[in-house]
Image (tube, rainbow, N blue to C red; front, side, top):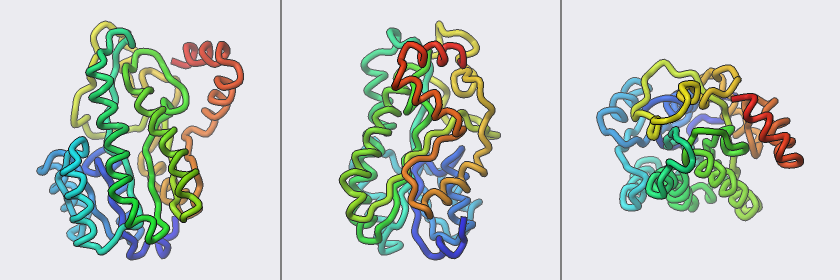
Length: 266
């Protein structure tokens, strides 16, 4: 992470008031970037912005609403005259057996995790392309390999991964850098802003971080620093832990073996 690289660049982090989003926002700010954070609850986003720094721009918004998204990026353009980095972090997880997860639950999670990312990226694209900037899409290990008892979550994150690849293929030649971040369960000291949905009728182990995956929790500050470094180097993907790539390769080549490993690892 090079502080001079980010000096005076403008960054917007959605879901930036708590969890990983807040840590990513703080890390960009510490590296010298001009920062805006957007989140659903006004009190939370105002409080987070004040704690990060007096120069941070807080924006209350619901990214499932196009009018709110348009307002966010109009505000950023008016306040900063442009944008260098969009971090699509806002999203939710869930739990539940796949057949118990209703189409309405799939639709609601898809609207936030996928369409929210798409709305924000489309709105930011003109400013980002002008500066040959960066889109950071926060996915999950579940964007590469599904697991049991996580309801609509893997479907939504697989879609984010596919969207990231489409952006790379079409807009990479025009100068846009797209980074897909696929982390395992992240350690957090604060409580979830919203409780997990669909928890009835699933094993207690599935309620653990990462739905009980056998991997250590990731330190959010270390992950945030890696995100900045991967942006500087314009890398396409960041998977943490890196050894998960072995599972992803096996699952593509040998699905039956991949499924066995997933069952064993969760």
